[in-house]
Length: 369
Image (cartoon, rainbow, N blue to C red):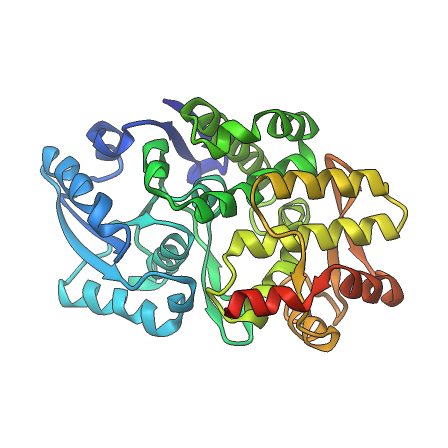
């Protein structure tokens, strides 16, 4: 096991990364002063890991209330969030009752938001079971739900007390979900860690083969990058916005295609290619750099062409992006490989060229077949 710390003074917390951590009661015990917790999970993860977690908690005399939600991005809504509140109230959960998020990014985001709001704030713990949630969404305290007009537009910054990333849970992850997580892993190399990008190029086959050591290293290196950024800029007033490489385009894809039709990591992958294309049009990176990025995403079995939603629809959805300031779009682009920059006032003609060059109507048809 390896441990990192997200340094936020009195709200600092550990990230434990390793194998067999779900069975390690000691890691949880220090964060459970009372003998009752509420576990929030979904219909996919519950049959795999809920009993194992309950047995671990029972070893330290902790009883649990279980909340099992429907699985999928389509359920990351206010209506589903109310199911958590219903269960907490029905079981008379108190301010001292921690919530444990057992699942992927959707479960983590909704559980964290519920914890921020229920009784005006209760403790919560992240136990991410997907690669994407282990390397990104479980770390940093971003919580929330989707709105029909925009992804993650309703939420709160609310930090967990602990993140427990058990690499063994990735063994049950579908190949498509594993690839989706790799999109966020690649992102760290592109925005701030060039040597990690080179490592990913050298070890992509091991990651896809679920080599435990390779996966643990990728999770560790990704979490270290994110922890450093979050410690410097918790509420995304500056540097933290760079973690959104590809997300302005990617969130538009997810919203435009209907939540759940494209996985978040798939949208980020296609969106990152669009951001790279725009960076190249600005003269920042070369065509060879764009080809290198494209090759790595293809090797990770991720889409490199975006669906053709139409220029106006893309602009509408991107206009709801959280980085919009003064009514103007802002993009995270690549000054060079390993260095990202937040850019205002991208020339509209270059943006239109990217939107036209990086999309295909085939991507729309294939997702609906």
